[in-house]
Length: 130
Image (tube, rainbow, N blue to C red; front, side, top):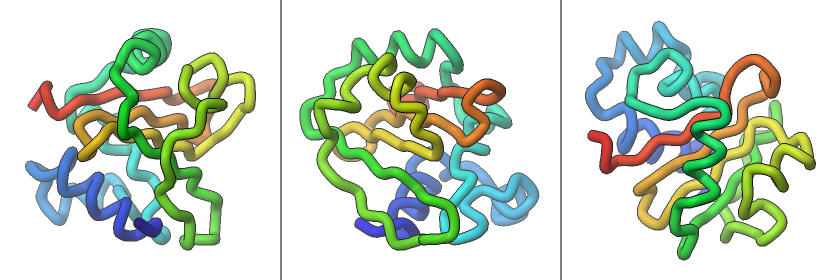
C-alpha cells in the first residue's frame, strides 16, 4: 500500500464521520497524504496522546501490524510489516523518527509520531473507541 492509499484508508477508518469541508479545513491528508495526524491532534477521533499513547502502544497486540514512514515531499512510501526495531514507543522515540505511523491488522488501531516530536503526539487510537 502506497502513501495515498494509506492516507485514504486512515481517513476512511478514522475520519469516516468527517465532512469533506472538515477534511479540507483541518488539512487532513493534504500534500500527498500528509497531516493525517490532524484527525487526532484536533480531537476529531477519540485518542490518547503523549505518555498515555506510548503506554497503550506498548501494550497492544502487534501481530500483523504494519509501519509507514512518510518522508516529506516523496509520496511514494510503502506500508510494510512492523520491524522489531519499532515495536515499542521507546525504540521509536530513541530513533527520533517523525511522520511515522504504525497500524494494527486491518487498521484496528493506529500509533502516530508527528513531525512536531516535542509538541504534538504521539497519538494512539483504536476503532474499538468508535
